[in-house]
Every structure is written in structure tokens, then in C-alpha cells.
Length: 130
Image (cartoon, rainbow, N blue to C red; front, side):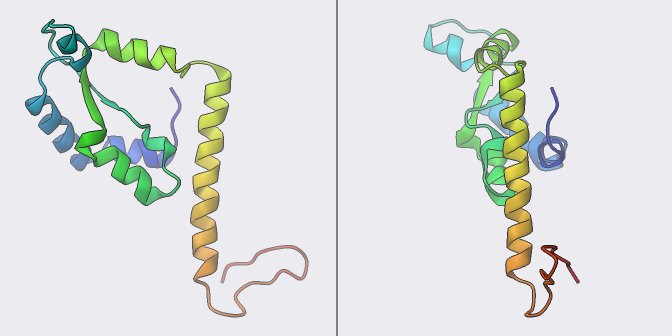
């Protein structure tokens, strides 16, 4: 599954490993099966609202590390959720790529909005960062 750079950075961070361990400690069983009265050990931590759905890097970080946005799941339930959302389909992949592009544009727009006066040269419809 291809993900953007921010997602990969967050998911490989010490903060993610710590919050993941904390969630598994709090909820050691698959939350879906537990609602059915079945105790199956959780092996995965699922983000209820996708990290990539954040419109800014800060919002994506909040989604990643917010323990209320996490769900302890067994491997089977985790696969069912992701397959149900169509993560492996081209339309879903295109949406993730578009979301990633939108976050990148938001970051660039934020940088452009804090540049000093005269830092932009749009005489040839080009933006030049100094």
C-alpha cells in the first residue's frame, strides 16, 4: 500500500510506537469481536478516521496520535475494514494521492502567506521563493 511521506514518517516514529503500545495495553482484545462477546487478542491498531484525511500536517498528526481515534483489532477484522473501504482499488488510491496533493498545496499556501512583501515574482505566472 503506497502512502505519502508524512504518513510513513508518523507511522515509524517513537511517538506512534508508544501510543500503539498504550492502546494495546488499554484494549488488548479485538474491539469488534469483544462487542460480540468474543475474546480474540488484538494484533493491529486501526485509525478510525484515516491519518491521511487531515487537511494539514498538524491535523494528520492529531489523527495519528489521538488515542480516541484508535481501535484495537485482530488481523482479520483489520483486513475486512481496509478491504471494505477499497484501499486496494485504483479509485481509492487516486483519492489518497489527491488528498496528499491537497495537503502539499495547503503547506505551500501557508508558506507563501508568511513571505515578506516582494518575495513573489508573478510577472511570468511563476512563483519564486526567496
